[in-house]
Image (cartoon, rainbow, N blue to C red; front, side, top):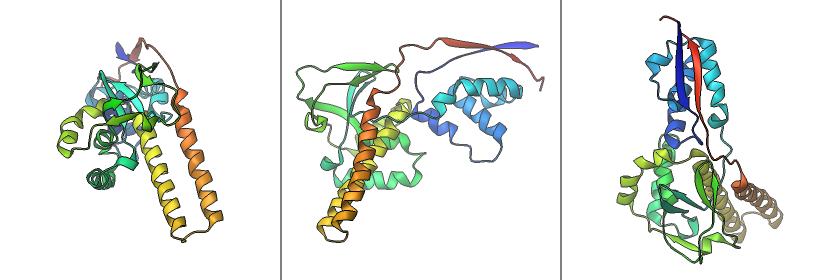
Length: 245
């Protein structure tokens, strides 16, 4: 008996979907497949478990690109009709640094909470007008300025506000968040490197080598801003062979 299964290919993988996909820690490849398909379709695990392996693999391949996203860092992004800005560490408060440190102890499980710290509503900007590029149905700010972090301010960190909005960040694009995390780590490393050198704990040559590596990583993350682009993805229809289980 044939059964037609329909699902939409989303434009990007969300943090919540990424968390569900990585929730399974066992060794069963079949269970991993089921977990992946459940995370990105509307079907429950119980029903997916009745599908034959070939059909399950076919669906998984449809989402292969989403499952391994190319991380991109964007400092400004309009999401859910609100302009969000990356909160640069040079303006970070002790409270947000402490919260970030605690949340990274369960990195995957707390990704949405980390996102709510790193991306906060823009309270003020110095652009005459904001120019956007649409990428994967996301509106990315592409104003050409020398140092974008000098051009906007984000909402002051408030632990209570973060907790109110963090659940909603499960719908935030995970490749943008992972790019921001990578950028954050590189800027922290850069800061620590210059601090170590000024304290004469590493040599000038060691600092130059580390700076070169960190700056390369930073440029690669920023360069990904011109990455994948799509305006729409049509629903996919598959006819699957029922297993009868």
